[in-house]
Length: 344
Image (cartoon, rainbow, N blue to C red; front, side, top):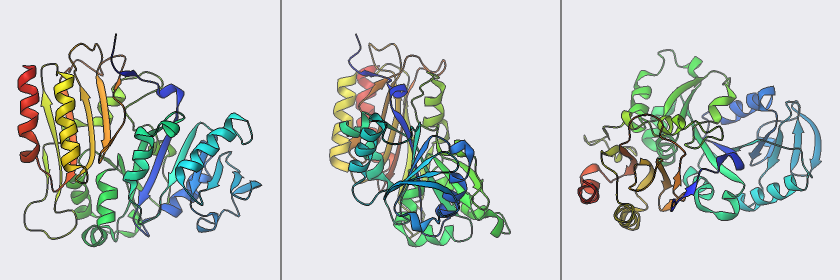
């Protein structure tokens, strides 16, 4: 009998988070999404209705904080605590007091750190009971993105922990922003980069990036991890901007791992370097488990380990991806070597 939770993703509502620095095009993107009929049966959480100009999009007001859109989705303002809002919405849905929805999209403010929002869905029992984190999507301004990454730590973190990157205002960048693209690839090699011209983007990009799949397609976990894209990326060549200490790398081992030994190592790593661990993702071959074990965390908050029904492919190696600030492979690998030596 497995010691770990099974994949219950089919029972929880997927959540997409749109983050991105001030002026990077989140409002334009959201307006286009709210008008898209493919967003039907979606719940969209925003800070203020007035910020996105909904007059031409909404059908009727349900109460002071919630409106129904022409596309069929529900738009709701979050005036206070996000956790309280999500729990209240889940309760209202259960009572059928609001229109049904199949997914949630959250827009953050331009200066927001998306990590606490991600953490809310990873290991808060009252939230995780109804919702699961599916994708973090960061908008990056093709015209001003390089300067924003150089001057603002918030911009760097938003891009570094995203599952997908959306390059906005591409039509205003005559050269296609090759330097910015290269910088984003070095900062976050695991995130696919897409273009959003005048906010136009396939709504599917906002969802479907998480490791768990209600349809049971375990290959999603492989795409989510994207371990093959990580070598030892980062910057250590004299730069003084905010992304100069961002490191991303993967740790791999062939033999099944001893869970207790791995857990002690990861626990010590979290205790010593929680602030530096921007994101940790892993698919592990754990001794005694038939399927792969998925782990996922930001800082010191981790989703309870979940066993998938099957491996994505014939590759049964344990693969762990770390995205960190000021913490490189050389500081992590000795402890990892102790774990895998015991497994050999």
